[in-house]
Image 1 (tube, rainbow, N blue to C red):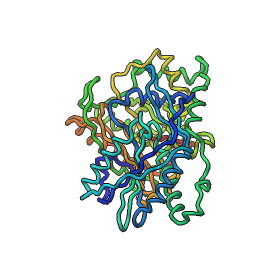
Image 2: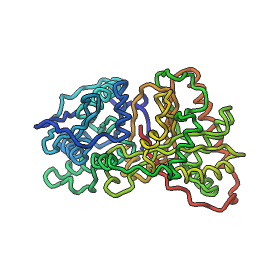
Image 3: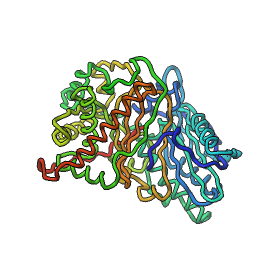
Length: 468
């Protein structure tokens, strides 16, 4: 999966097709409240549109009937895609539509005269369609061309995470080609069964708090005490004072090729950690070398698809965990500390974040964004074997920013990183220098001697998922 942003995604011109979703009957008020992630997202959703999109190639022109049936099957299979949100009496309420009443209607196509016009039309349509308080809160579309076409769809963040985008690519690819090959004989029931994210939200609402004496909760509280009850921020100057924001800049670059990634993974294992631990260690060393201090506190997202019903479900299945990465005397020494710290941090992901915030008496928020580093190994997700063949993309919107956020992805081609940060002169200089320094640390790690530094230690199974 090529992870990028909409300002860098420029598909070839063609006929831009979209489908609307109509319901024969109106929605019903759901007893299931928004999840914690959805509540936080929706509380600030009026400021800008935060959506995730995906695109992939198909041969020839679009079979419109097959794609319409594929989209219909997708939205009826996943509970979150036939639900919506509204404000009532100063609270956010979930609404649910009966999937059997949903109908897809093809809109008149729009002809784009060149690639830039195509990009602008797509960007504007995603912003308009993926509104968190609308139904549907997503865009179902395609770019129709004679020789090769693009299927593209986007969803408000309330309904999807990065893992979901791989599920959607896999499902749509199977559904579209199934309906195209066998218009009468194909059934969506041939796809793997999945649970409903709405059911997951119901289970989350009923989750029992852990004991106040639980050492995991105490570790969370210590972390925030050391941060003065504030979410950690990127330690280098980005040119934006607390309480202010700037237009968002994005940086998308490769970190390591395939063979170098394999060597880096081996280096991390030899020193008792994972690739994710290696990335965090490289960032901590880069921060220290650039004058940002020897400790790097941050939050990282982890997926919560730990039971079978959720493994193939579309939704926002993530939580967070805290870690403090300490820069040591070089990459190996830093990794040897980061590996155990990361294993301890993963355990903290089992603590409900709302309970942490309540126990703190609330967080002191000075910024809208939260500094975080996410890691996704796309080789382990659905459609992994198809991504190169169909040129699958994960596309994020570009809005405003007041802190730095990083999404590291591993594919069969190696490691890449997408960075979101404030578009100021200081921010651009800082981020360019920082990312170059991270690469220097990675290169030094690869060049390290292959003799074992410490006995190999099992690294944590970390497929922490980006959420944007």
